[in-house]
Image (cartoon, rainbow, N blue to C red; front, side, top):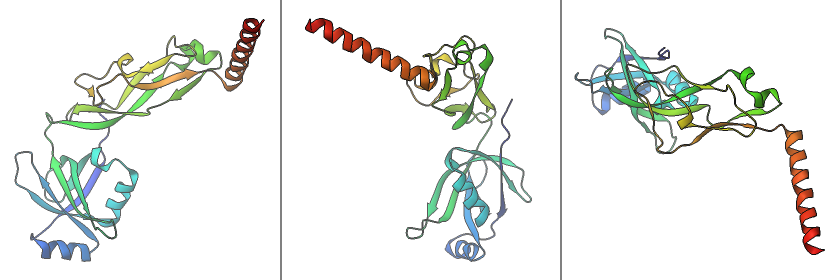
Length: 212
């Protein structure tokens, strides 16, 4: 199932050039341009406060948006650049790329863990430690997965789950070319402490025997 794509609301900007851009900023708007996708470039204005909120939410450059402009068909876009004021570090211009359904893009996809009750390690008190709650995947714009599913069935304390252990959605592939860790099942703190004490005692005993 495709993940719901957040809306990015804008208005068409009449006029181009520095004059129109300055006027937009005076009206608490951030000018931008939408390009690509086999259509003409479209100058737009984005509400400043709404844009700031999305920028603060994080990963603005790797989020797919549904661009809504009055009088235009909705279109999927991804940001390809945010220009900022060199002094105030506030956005002054945004570049958005139109996407076709066959376009491949990099997006962070949520990782969902299921079948906790079927994991012996968790039943014994082990703790699921999530290293990557999201994984960046290269996917088709028209087939964006809602999540990656990790099956915990049979997982024991000490087991480590790597990206190669997970069945990725059709057509998707990880952007990192190595078998990185997604999660592991670690021993509960008391059990881990007991194991450490036992290991230390074994080392002491081994030392005493070698000195004898």
